[in-house]
Image (cartoon, rainbow, N blue to C red; front, top):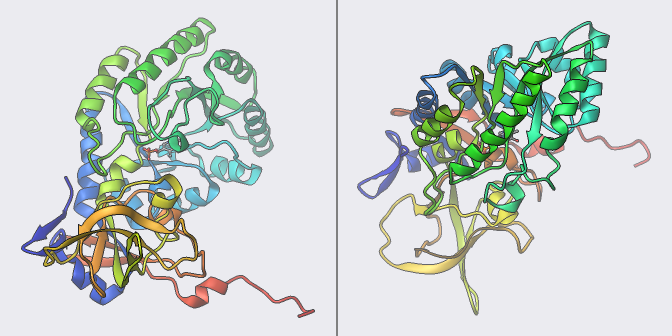
Length: 417
Ligand SMILES: *Cc1c(COP(=O)(O)O)cnc(C)c1O
């Protein structure tokens, strides 16, 4: 459940009419519901209330400072994948001891930044990265907390582009080689082994792959014990799916019950890295219809948002619900909703039955809070959209719409021109 509902014919974000936000801020615009963000965090947190745990929100899903601060106020930390994300998280006031750092390509300066910040741990994704973190920590006279991201070779049964835990994936260290890498890490002077990590994919709609993963990692953890390596943290990654259309993923409570049952005797502090589950249905993107067009074979609704604003449909063929901001049109059409970008892949909805939108109608793209704004770009020199957070009957611009001047910031003409 989320707080984007109709009152009469008018779509509201909490107590604010969406049309009022657009009248003030323009379109396209991302709108986040503070109450929904809090609710989703609370649901996840309560699912693990019976065991020691920390929710390290995977901020690549939505890294707006106001979204981050909402979760930090509730006691959350972050899962970061770059130095830039660390900077954002610190800007929003994260507790460094609640930061975990994942990603296959950590650079020296990023490792240094994280060590100087005093983050909880690095989720190490390769053998060479172990050596590199040891070296950088040694240079700084620090000890780096580490977990190995283990690739358990479990099929999460989701979209191939967001499957990360199969043998052929670039992520993590193969489970068969993990024990020997832990033993190698144990001999490194500047590393402190404190955990084990996994993240098998995104938009999972079943609990079973998570449980299969835990069962596999338990065997590894036994092997570690025998080798005299004891852990404190078990990072289970993120990946719990949401409803975009008719998917029925487990609720956080159900996911929690299953995981707690499987891990409760291990004596480890659990870490979670949910992204989409916390923010996906806490945000919408609103665009305005510029033109409608009847092709020979298709109807098109041309809007002022494009694949640069919401990339998921063109990138993964993803589905976002389409709703009229004002529900006064009874007639429906089957159409594609497309943007102004000069690419045939620039669509937001395809062959979809929808209200017969006309010029100047506002259209809401639902479930756009995750991997929406964070994946946006300036392609076609389009300034990026504004972001708004609604709380009760008020709304706040939490990121200004970019201006055309922002597009050329940092560019310079060489003297020979
Ligand atoms: C992207 C990512 C997540 C979050 O995935 P969701 O499906 O959004 O929950 C968690 N951990 C890692 C390492 C990731 O790369």
